[in-house]
Image (cartoon, rainbow, N blue to C red; front, side, top):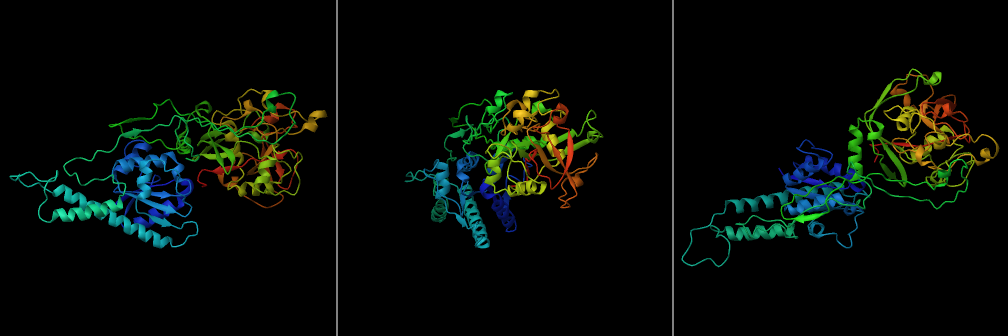
Length: 529
């Protein structure tokens, strides 16, 4: 049966790719997706390369931004160089690129294809039937051509040389071959497969080993050692700055830290084999899933979701609580996270709360855009996170993101440093200054790159307030009982004692409370699209 390789960009086509794969498997077509069939030899890029080599047909799902992906274009290039029949699937939101990036993409776009009206969900079943039929016809045509080319034998030399510089074919094979060739070229208008030279091995054009020296333009999806750097500077004005720490006057920035390794500049040779490098988020998630080192071994990775920067927290284990803290911090025990997760890089600001139409009965105490949003009940904070396809973090998730596997007492280490947190604004002019803008202290961020996890505002968590030990099944109970207390974490701008700013410090507050001391940061599961 035919085998196909499906190339796609997750941001545009993840759901459609899985739907097509499942439907085609039921129609006797073997499908390779990069989320399945990964038992081949070699690391992930090599598996992609081998999968393309072993596939009979290369199918590419083309959505709104697919061809902005460097890595999708790598797959198209390699498939074209391997002389694979190219079959485009045009989605409803696809728009043709202008200009066309290269000859490989051009070969794909000139090929016969199928259109899926995926957004309106019209005629999906018919489109899948058409796609399956095209795959089977293409497979049959290519197999027939290859069989003729393989089995054709030249006749003995005659007295006068043949007029064509090609072996003579037996009987009516010439006519059949011409018909099949024309049919195949109709499928492959790019002309990369040339059956008119059966005595020669088709030689692809110069194979290019491409390793970008700068980050590709597509944001979503790689190299584990990459430092992407993207600075987001707000134009909002907020003149309130603490006098004790000069660094707090900086406008917050979202820094994407993922630096590519030193690699040769893109070169072209006739013998090189194309190498595939996954997009940054793919490799970051792979590393996060298998991470087992100390805090210092982890390189912070930031990804935007709907314009909100979130930091990646790798899978791992840590000891929650502290034996040197309050009674409710004692009886600490190990908690493990089998999968990574995302957590907000900053506390939710007034600007961000408004952008997602957050609803709160009470106005913010300080309404300038870059101050963190306060005066939210637990319910209002929970509902806000849900509008972003996220949720409140459990207290275990919050503490792990703040201290890591090293078990730090503060986000920056085990020694208190008064300049690395926003605190002691509980009297005089300092009280009027109140909470500081988000991300105002660079040196106070945690091992995963999250700011203000000590000081500024306490933060709501999902967890019900109870004594240790805690259990996973208790963590995410969205009990609507107004008498239930929920855990808040992180200390606040009014606290005057360093002990209250330890990341193990915990207290509980009634869910209907709203105050100028409590804010929120959201988390997001990696499985959430």
